[in-house]
Image 1: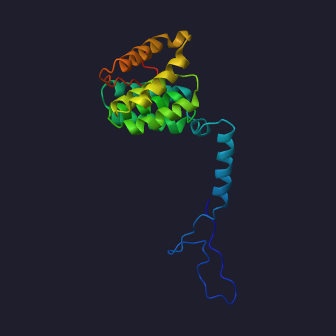
Image 2: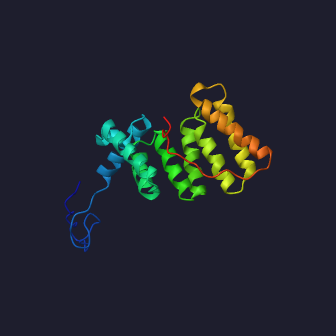
Length: 197
């Protein structure tokens, strides 16, 4: 929202009161932007997402997510990362997007960065053992076996007794056995969230 330049006060030598640019074009006053920012913050705190507020449909989100998976499956990790990054902005509460973004980073060899996004996914869904499992693989690739073991044990405790995590429980158990035997670290096999669903 633009305002008109202020008229200088009588007796004042100033011709620019801060409400116009050096070229004389009006610039925003800051008040409408502040109010909009406060409204946005309130809506985000109430659980709304930016995508919802901008009117993006669920169908659009799912189509973009499927396209990101397709790019990932083709080994186009940077392109897929851009897609999943957009989706994280669209819906900052959907853990699938953080896990998929982290998987792209992991496959691109950026394991430290991947760990950050797996951590966010873990915090957003404290019942999902997948981010801890993938974090363990990153730690192993970085030679940080102690942290890998902690992540695996955490993932195992979350997956134990949960039917939907039975396969992951087995994978975690096998990796822990391998660590106990001091065998080599497994190769990266990150998959975007939902790839096996």
